[in-house]
Length: 292
Ligand SMILES: NC(=O)c1ccc[n+]([C@@H]2O[C@H](COP(=O)([O-])OP(=O)(O)OC[C@H]3O[C@@H](n4cnc5c(N)ncnc54)[C@H](O)[C@@H]3O)[C@@H](O)[C@H]2O)c1
Image (tube, rainbow, N blue to C red; front, side, top):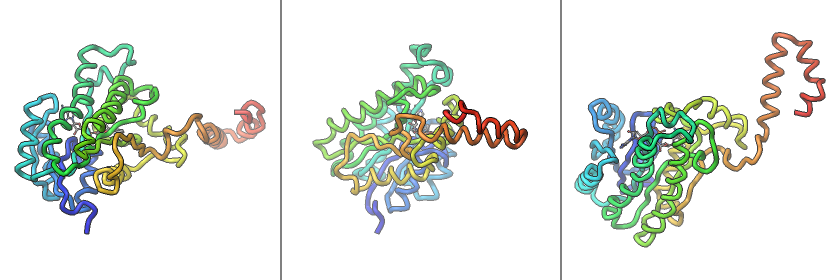
């Protein structure tokens, strides 16, 4: 019997098959859960979500803009009819105007800040508030965050400030909903190529840093976020709430570049070796390079 046999959940944030929400939904489906999905209003968005959600027998596919209180209320009423009491909700949503995200936080516009906070942070409180009455037997709410909310990650900018607020929201919501046995947790995922990630400047460079510095010498696979999501919505995590769980090959624990300098040095020397072996030999002998 699947880990989620008999469980029902609502998934916010599938834009296409590359979405992190989809990686979690797929695992949930494989483990026997019945699912409902929301998508941003619009034919194109609906088509993309139907393409992936219909083949797995989605019980509900409906538009939802989390900037609208009415939309969120309507979606939960529909989910109640289509699925009955809910066991879990995935909140995998973030948005900020690209021009605001791609400049230093110092330069963020007031409007960009308000919009990014509304969609990426307030929506978790709104969704949780509307979810609670439908989670009559308790349950699990999971959101997606990023390390750029804990430490400065150049390029993440305004979204980092949103993630810091989201991380704090997870803890307050865990406290508020704890008496109802509703758990609220976040997965802090390493870089995954998605539509939302394309708004972050230098995404490829950021992902490359994980291969250089993470304790596991690699970046994560999107399926690994799916598995962590499965754990957090299953009863295996029944004692866990208010947690920010890092799925990042350990990148967040590093306090120095670790093996990155050694790796960059040998990559550099390999390049020089290919075109100028004498220079490469000299550089290998060079005291300063050795010290590096
Ligand atoms: N991709 C990464 O590297 C990465 C890493 C850590 C955390 N995250 C977080 O994961 C979450 C999901 O992003 P993703 O990378 O899967 O990208 P994605 O583009 O696939 O998903 C983002 C989703 O947000 C939804 N959305 C945006 N505005 C909305 C609104 N007003 N109302 C309702 N939905 C709205 C979009 O429709 C989309 O489905 C985000 O919170 C993101 O910050 C992503």
